[in-house]
Length: 161
Ligand code: MN
Image (cartoon, rainbow, N blue to C red):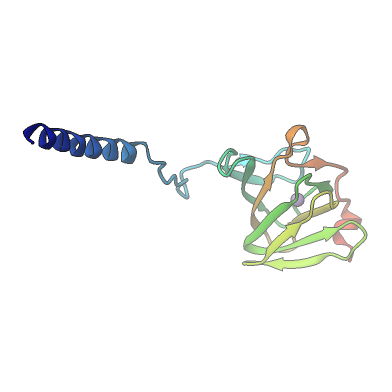
């Protein structure tokens, strides 16, 4: 009887130790604090203008997703491009334009949420008179990556309808 009690106590002790270990190994919330990063220059292959970006979703969490805040001053925009697995974009400041190849430009402003389907040729950027910032994120597609860059958006295309 004493032996059974001893075993029971030992088992309870082990259970507590294992529980504590599980808590130590539990995944932790990670926060990229606003203001903790310095903006980086957006790549010239992808942007017209001196576009600045915070790549605060560096990839891996969620799996294969990357993204960040991109800040366009008036007149600045991406080149024409596609995303192999699409792109989600949330306007967080200012006013901008989004255009799909062969379609009219669309006005977007703070709070608007945009979905660019996979393979759709498009550009996005600020309007000619007002800057725009958006959060953009996309899923990586193996060797194709996040984006396929094409030709720049000409001033005529940019200022057109
Ligand atoms: Mn895009």
